[in-house]
Image 1 (spheres, one colour):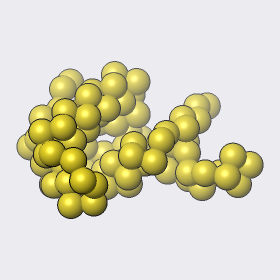
Image 2 (cartoon, rainbow, N blue to C red):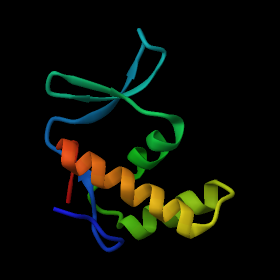
Image 3 (spheres, rainbow, N blue to C red):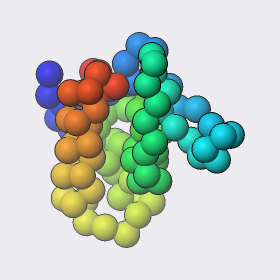
Length: 91
C-alpha cells in the first residue's frame, strides 16, 4: 500500500504515541516494539488521526517550519512510506 497526498493515514492498530518517562521523550509504542522518533517525525505523527489527509498534514507542517512545501512533502511521504512498510501506519 502506498500513500499519496489524498490519503488519510492513521496509526495501525496497537500503535500510539506515548510519553516515556524513562527515556524522557515521546515514543511510538506498538505491540512489543518501541520507536524513538526525532522531533520532526513526532510533529508529523501527532497529526496522523485517520481524518486529516496527507496534504493537510503537509500544509500544517509548512506553516510550522520554514521550508519549501515540496521539501516537506517529499520528507513526509518518504517517512510515511517507511512506516507503512513497517506496519506502523495504515490508510
